[in-house]
Amino acid sequence: MKTLVIIPSRMSATRLPGKPLLKINGLSIISHVSKVAEEANIGDVIVAAEDQEIIDDVKSNGFNAILTSNKHKSGTDRIHEALKKLNVRDVDFIMNLQGDEPAIYIDDIKSLNDKMVKNNSDLGTLAAKIKDNKNLKNENIVKVVTENSLESNHFPKAVSFSRNSDQVENIYHHIGIYCYSRDCLEKFVNLDQSKNEIKNRLEQLRALDNNIDINVSLAMSSPIGIDTEEDYLALKKIMEYKN
Image 1 (cartoon, helix red, strand yellow):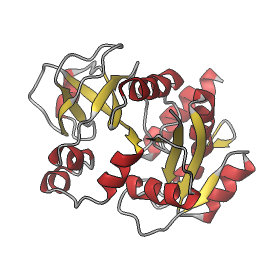
Image 2 (cartoon, one colour):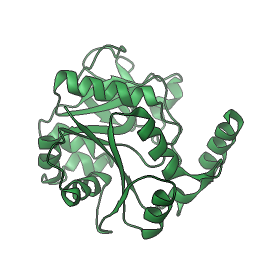
Image 3 (tube, rainbow, N blue to C red):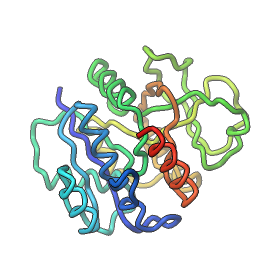
Image 4 (cartoon, rainbow, N blue to C red):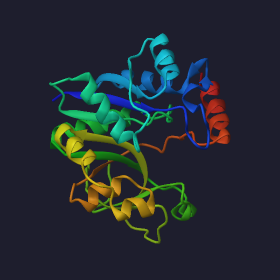
């Protein structure tokens, strides 16, 4: 079974424009993510971007990138276009990594890929334990409820995703990394947005609303995503200190 890692990226993030090219330890955020993906060693890695400057940066740092349309509504549509453009035939799974999570754990990427291959699943994602119950009400932290408790060797199905929850059992912090079987990705991008998806601003609800199972793998911890200037400065400090 062969996996291809595609990292969607664009300069026009509403809260932090130009985010992919912000630097940490002299390397752009998008190139940091490419580096982590390469080190996970689960398959070829490519950045799919709508901006030439992202392509140039990624390539200048020795990674692969492909230019895609600027008309996409979601990262999933972008990775699908990249897959079609690449015209690769021998890929079974497509891993969609977030371009703004340079601190994602390599072992979590590997673990999700291993479980996808072993179970021949349609769609898989990651979630971490919630350490502070205040986060149940934090709308910026997406939650996933799983049918059984999430342990490192389990791969249970997701029951629901939400931004705000009163549930306390089998609820976890969802990490927006997805691994699709090739057929599932084709099917997903051809589905209309569902009412649930639009209302909650959560693309993964389109899958559940169309009876596509999403299996969940336990991540060792929640990586800091970069949405704001504060996030960037906080993560920069941590990564520069570690360096």
